[in-house]
Length: 241
Image (cartoon, rainbow, N blue to C red; front, side, top):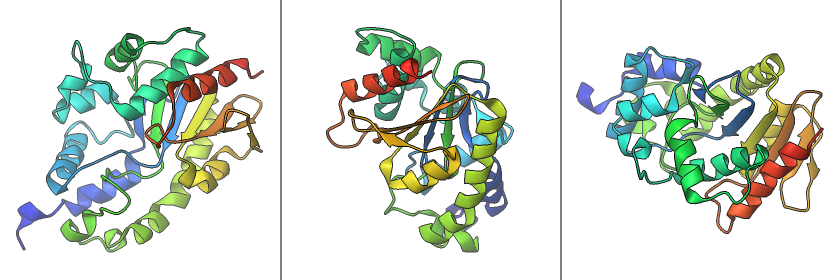
């Protein structure tokens, strides 16, 4: 066995247990998705090693971390706008009452504010390991951890624990808004929120607790979704009592 072809399994288990996402638990705007995108073994291994070298934090600073893994270009003048972040940012800007949101508004927010440790957003992941797709599971080939032998075992190992942890964090921190994105995991989103959801005419679900507005929305990269769809989500958040 060539160790260069394998993850550090001790580190992988720490990542599974400890990492939840980016930003600030005290922020008003929380976004919860299934998992962050990854790549091949080399890319995922770099992401996890950088996370370890930076202190194995529960919440990372999105900008500092991505610069550390080699994605500095996302935060420079004229940066390309990351497709998922694009739509999440549009929700925030719309919820804050900004009209006629344009590409430069989104780019500026991506560069300076999204997922920062001291700013207003919190980006959480239901699952802790980066992966390029549901079908592409690199961990089975590069780890000896039994629950990483396939995605189903991995999800069975992680999901309920993380549902409970995130749900308790929401109750503790009481953000103004929690947006769950990705309809496939609606069951998990409903368990985390623990509120009744109702459909809207704009095509997303909305629910409320005493402190927080919850929405379940299409994934930002889903086929056919428009900027206006995400602007309407922000407006609904702003209009909620």
